Image: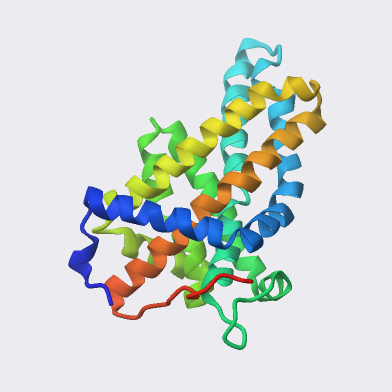
Length: 254
């Protein structure tokens, strides 16, 4: 069982956590990747539409140009995050909730998801990060780190939306740099690969479908890393804070 002092940030702990994330990703890929397909195939279209429209390049009067750019940026950031938090909550179910002593199947995960709560948390998180990013970036980063564990909390501790957001803040407080050092690099790397895929999508044709395929493929492959990281951080910090260890399954699905 962890004690709170264990989670003071250090390079050794960070690298050890990254190694656990890497091992968990590949051990659970048979559930993580199909689950990502279910979430991100439809949401990839939602994100691809504003990217394809390129609203910031519209030829508008000067009076409307600033508002157009503002709304376009807000939409791109919010839709880029949309689904990531919901998916993380679903992964929390897959990794921590047994069924007859075995990991749950995809159908059992789908039946167990608290859809309303996770969708609301996802939307609130996306909007707050987008608004914070407009305010000189730093507030967006703070929101991203402090509220980034809300979705696993919803599913692991069965909390409501407001309680889950507050619980995430309490878990991260005192462990900010550890959570930052894990979640932010994964998110930045995923966004960079996603942007690269978007820039290369003309190889598939300059169309909405090509945008959709590029965005969906990167989300399916990369978002599970973020989700696993958030779940591992949540379970470890709950154990460190409360002495209650919501353990992961010891063995991945066959």
